[in-house]
Length: 140
Image (cartoon, rainbow, N blue to C red; front, side, top):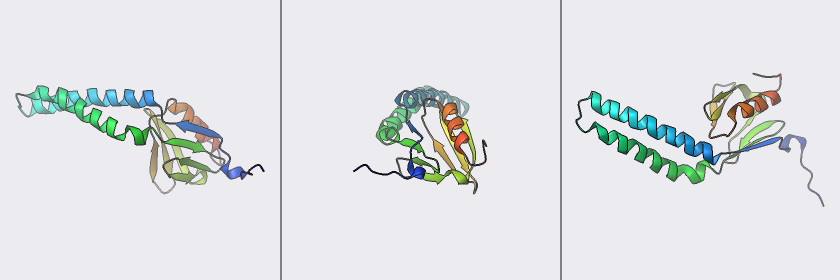
């Protein structure tokens, strides 16, 4: 017997975390972190400011490796009534005030002021437009 799925639970669109975007973003963080760490060390007069060029990328690599299995497993789903992540986060589209693309992610701002970030998406502007198109009352 076929399972009947309620209209509000029908998945309109699914967005998995993109591995290439995840790696690219971590490379950018490593470069910016290295430059920032070297600048701070140089500014405070540390003669070994070059250590920032090694420490910051190493820290970002450890962070990226440690969180990769968790971050890359997230899949976002859009239904007629909800936006939900596979990690248990879900919001009603009626509660969404604004949706905007930020870098490789999409920020969803709720009416109460809470925010959630859909990170490491391959096409964040397309995701933002798709969610905005489903909001009750039109694009916000």
